[in-house]
Length: 231
Image (cartoon, rainbow, N blue to C red; front, side, top):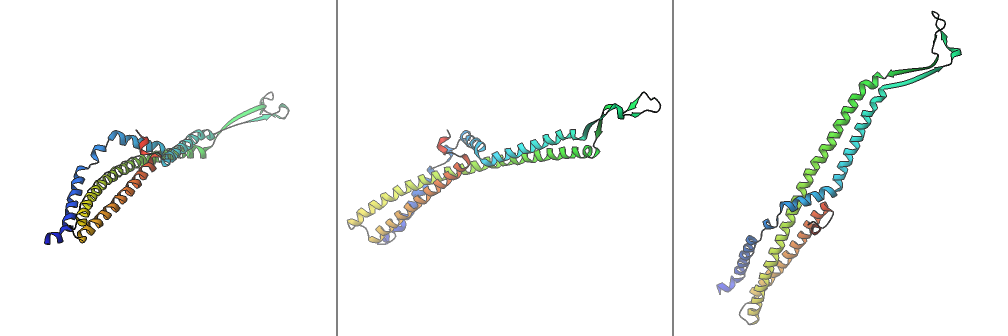
């Protein structure tokens, strides 16, 4: 009598052992491939919009640097003056020689621009380096995030396998108890407890499947395509 009274607990303990035995057999390690993970990372680097934005920032900083370097020519100002011969000033020492006769050219240096331009170029170089550093930092972050999400995806896959196998075992136990209950060899309490355990396992399986779908979506968000499309 005592045995039958404690049978529900015994059944749950057996199921616990079965579940942990399955857990020891299921592993994500065989599914791991460094080559494949690197492929996922490269796909994410080529697709993810923030990576493209980082490259755009680099392009803008590069253009600004080129513009500031080219602006060195602003230091020099060239001009010319045309003075007709009839209005030319006469040299009193040599009357045959006139100042400002015809076209007169001149070159002028803008000292303010000459002193300011090197600082502008240096600042542009620093801004370009900052843009490069930000891009490189995010590439490292993105690679880490892809790996973490993919590992979580593999974990969820393994959990679904465990839940499916455990549910199969629960179904077998429930079927056996139902058979005995219908023959009058088992109490309703035991049969009811087995049904509750089976329903709980079904809900656990559904939850594991939902977690798997969410993990897949997290990975594919970074890839821009389905995992299966990456061979």
